[in-house]
Length: 113
Image 1 (cartoon, rainbow, N blue to C red):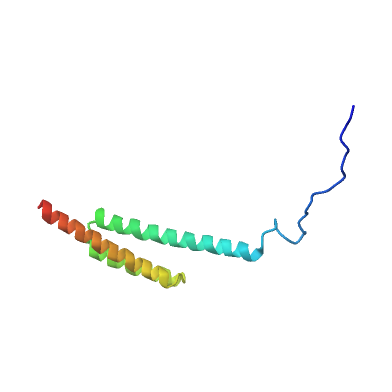
Image 2: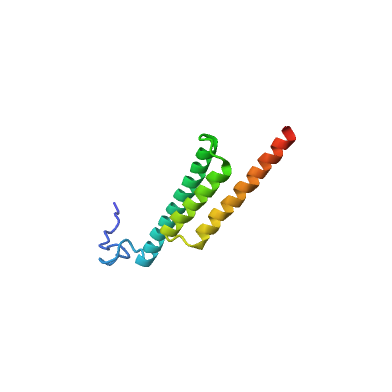
């Protein structure tokens, strides 16, 4: 009966002892920085949107007051967390969207009223 020869070979490439699974440390730091930014943006956007909806729908606060309050809160949090000008532009854009939606609601009320 024929049998295969046993090869005394190790792995083709063995990582050096000082690296962690071949990943460049700069790439790893960049990945975690991106993950942190994504988490911060997503968390603050969720907090602003849910807070605005809660204040206007369930607490009876006028929409303009809630919008101004949460815009100030969002910009202040973004500045404290060093999120930059893109965050401020996003909050202002959300305010413009809120005004547009409220205008459509007002126009719809006029049509139905």
